[in-house]
Image (cartoon, rainbow, N blue to C red; front, side, top):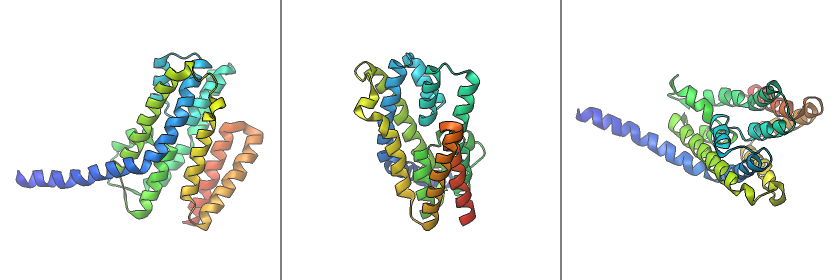
Length: 236
């Protein structure tokens, strides 16, 4: 019995350390998530006239900043359900690539972990997870810490933004719309360390710009992600 307790303590301590370390690592990015989460909540209230529970439900179950902003925009344009679903899928398709990239670095990941981990993978958790994987094996507890902190930040900011919606009639007036772009630029700069990284970033920009002319924002996001992924695979 003593050996079992000692084994559990030894196993749980590294898990807690991984979770706590990830929480600190992702916290600055979670602040930027909170900023543009305010903009989402305000827009859901003012422009789309969602209820608070509808806003929270979307943030909980869709949990995609770019995807949710796209949904709000398409709803205002009276787009069909299929158009909204396909556009959201294309924007979120980059998470499949994220998962393939991080999967090889995950340590002791059981099949049962994959379902909930797939829901909390974001640009921010992927960013800090990639950096952590360069230092040592990426633990499930570390990834959980990064994903959950971002998830909570997004939910809380959606609620706060909705409540402040009456005061923030136009989020763009306060520059909140740029917070989303600024967060992505910050993530990109933090990951540019090798020549292949710069090449991947450059090709992603070119692919996104070209795709945008033909298939709009959704296709541009997916094209950029695929271009960067191909460079990453070839450089290995």
